[in-house]
Length: 480
Image (tube, rainbow, N blue to C red; front, side, top):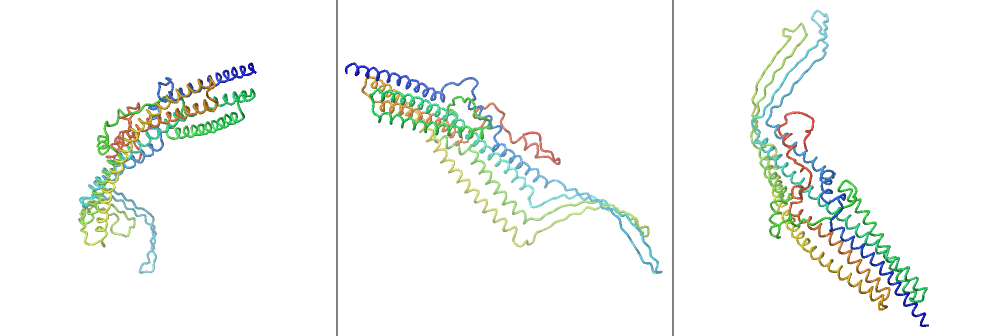
């Protein structure tokens, strides 16, 4: 009896030593998964800057917005065309059959080939300042469009950061759950051996099996989340993720205080600046509508030559040239211009209210981003402390279990607490980086220049200057 009890004690210690080795292996894998988000990465790994460069260059959303902006640039030369003359050339030629009945009842017939050529030049002298206001509206639309492009670029870069960190975090979570399942398999195996030895009850075996199944479910969920995050990364960045390097927060690039962040947003955020240009567009549109109430003046010069092949005519060719001036003074148009003016004033009032709304929304976004960023610092610090405490607790439970003072479920619970703590730490590290970039986007500074990315900045004014003074040509410019 004593020998049997001694054998059981030895078996228990051996089993717990095996479980301890498995748990140590799991802890090392979990620690490596967490460190993969914060420590230096291999030289061949893709880093966050590389992902942002790819997204900036290839993302369809930002490229579509650039094409839209290039189309908006064309509004300026279209408006400038109002200053330029309109030249129209005309040419007419054909066959004309003539059959004449003469007084002596004889019939005279002939086939004529008349033709006419002419050119007309029309130049607007005054159109109620419509051309000038059209140019001003087009230029303001270009400026507003550039801010919209900047805003879309910020959103794409933030999406790329989020996708990058999600892949990094989900990969770490997957490794953590995989290590957890490996440990749970070892625990289940040792528990069955202890059951055969009569050291534990079937309840312990059922607990180990239940915990293993829970771990398998968690592993499957982590694998699904990782696959989805990889596909979203490919969609945003334009390339599938490989080995991703750790990323760091960018607090150094953001304002140091919340009031400074709000002030920066009011002066730099593209949504606010774009809404300001939209107000200017609406104000200028009022003047454009009022121009319909003013006189219109133009001058027209024309030259033409007509040739007739009818030999019976005394004149076979006619050449004409003329210069005509014309002034039109609107008297009454049924109330159209007045209605358009009132409408433009209401639209201008709406645009001012929209500007105020966007300012309030941007301020709320900055405050929320600031608070969230500060909150992630506290959450990360708490998660790190929780991991350290859970690690110490696990080591203690393992030693007590080896001494027979703890059961298998105690070890399982302590190990699960550590796994959960490390999972929360992984998510806190992900949230910490994303929150810092979100704050940078909220203040309007999430761009290539601020992040110092190794890619040329897209310059929308290059295309603008290429087409602004173009008088002709159907080819799109070769520049940006």
